[in-house]
Amino acid sequence: MLLKIIRFLRGSVDFTASGKFPERFMNITAKNGVNLWNPIPKKNAISASMYLSDYKKIRILARKSRVKTRVTAKHGLPFIINRYKARTGLFAGAVCGIILCIFLSNFIWSVKISGTEEISNTYLESLLEDNGISVGMWKNNSDVDQIERNIQRKCGDIRWMSINITGSLVTVEIKETYKKPKLDTSKNPWTIVNKVDRKNRKIK
Image 1: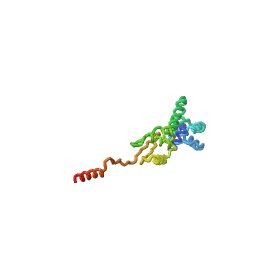
Image 2 (image 1 turned 120 degrees about the horizontal axis):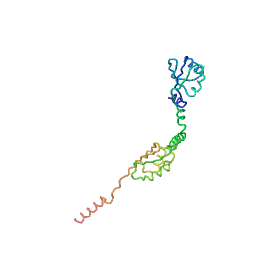
Image 3 (image 1 turned 60 degrees about the vertical axis):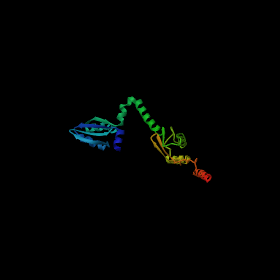
Image 4 (image 1 turned 135 degrees about the vertical axis):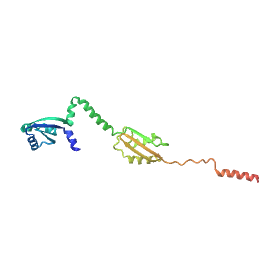
């Protein structure tokens, strides 16, 4: 895989070398440190591949070997750049656009809160902002575990919370503490008993 990437970045060509002694051409290129691959022998010819930079150097070697070389295919980044050289502005704009997208992806662009009933979302947003989480803030320095602990210490009504950062989206899940239901103390049993007891006394 790494070799394919290197070949793509450097550029390579498929070519044929034809003449009476193509094997001699192979020997001369090997002695001169020219790297080629996928050699296929043919009748009075040989086909192979090599880096673009090496192919530019083999003209002298081809003459010494009395063979003629011809490019049959071109591969890699140098040929792509050369093809779109007339559209330099378009290429530069695309590169700048990619860099801008990568840069902007390091910021928080949306905060979504779920699970709240009694706690105000506005209050939670202010707590998150105090801890470095809000729209437009840099996200890579956010210690999520520490922020969760800070907010739970600040707001006792939070039983459990989870903060997840996915891309530029922050999702906050909340579970509030259970609250005991309020008892109705307007009617006490002892009051009723006292009233009944008083009536019985009057009858007697």
